[in-house]
Amino acid sequence: RRAVAIGDPQTSTERWFGALAAHGLLGDDGWLQPDVRLTAMGDYFDYHVPERDRARVEGLLLLGWLAAHAPAQVTLLAGNHDLARVMELARVDDDRFRAAADEGAAVAALPRDRRAAGEAAFAARFPEVATPGYAARDYNAFTVEQRALVQRLLLAGRFVLAATAPVRGATALLTHAGVTRREL
Image (cartoon, rainbow, N blue to C red):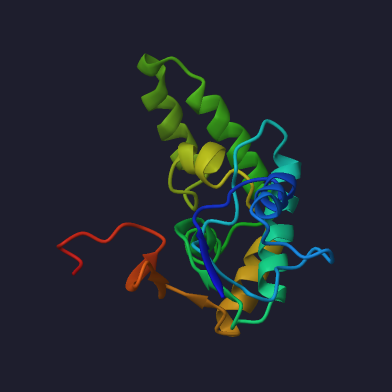
């Protein structure tokens, strides 16, 4: 078996499948080869492109494709962008988030000496979104449909916070974020 780990896909499906194909991981049917054991290490959403509507759909397609594989073949680690959909953005709908993302981008474009006022206005208008940067950049492709998919996968037990995998005769700990001595 080939063990493969990929962190933070946050990309288009074209690039994702292109990378898998370039490494011989896909079969002729477009699914993973039977001998591939893939650990996807979180953050399936929110790659930054000027055209956010494309990124909104791409994350759904990518995570849906991964989740359609058997759990024995694909392990899904939860990333902060994935969990934000059911935590920080739990009460935000699509229209509200689009408005916040547009306003967040306008705040980010302000000169530094005017940004504090823009951030204060953003916080007053969108108290449910932590910062203009989260709206405009970090979670820029959020949709309620993504949140529903993450919820279904959480309830189905498909997401984990960590996994192990063999690496050159040893066992490696795989997590979405780094682990420091403090966490150990």
